[in-house]
Length: 149
Image 1 (cartoon, helix red, strand yellow):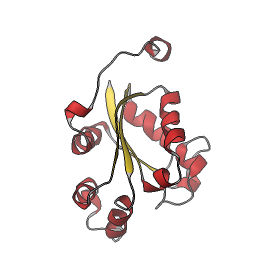
Image 2 (cartoon, helix red, strand yellow):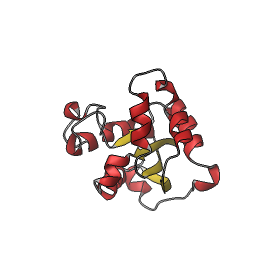
Image 3 (tube, helix red, strand yellow):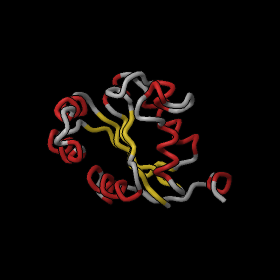
Image 4 (tube, helix red, strand yellow):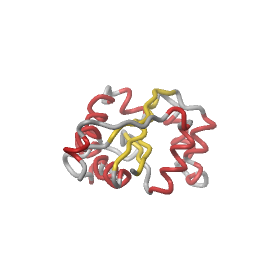
């Protein structure tokens, strides 16, 4: 099973979309294996977004992600990264497919509600940054026989 990191960003938390966003991943068939509500430190934000450190939007991005709590989650399933990214939708909400999280709830790139790992390799790195292994659970779901072949 592949795992992916999903963050409900401050705009998703402030707009009270935690439940509907989680529901999208559950309905997709992904399995929740880690969940926490956290106030992101500047240090964690800078580490998470280090790839963008030399870009002009880096400082506003850091200010935004630490501005309000974030829901950090780990979801598991076959091709979890791609399944989650399809569920999330395009980075630009106005270009996102209707039915995706960003397509249904978003308007602007800077308020696009959710972060999702962009590759299985980055998912491993991001999960380790946001979660201790002891914070993740492993369990069998009775419904898996109806979701997975």
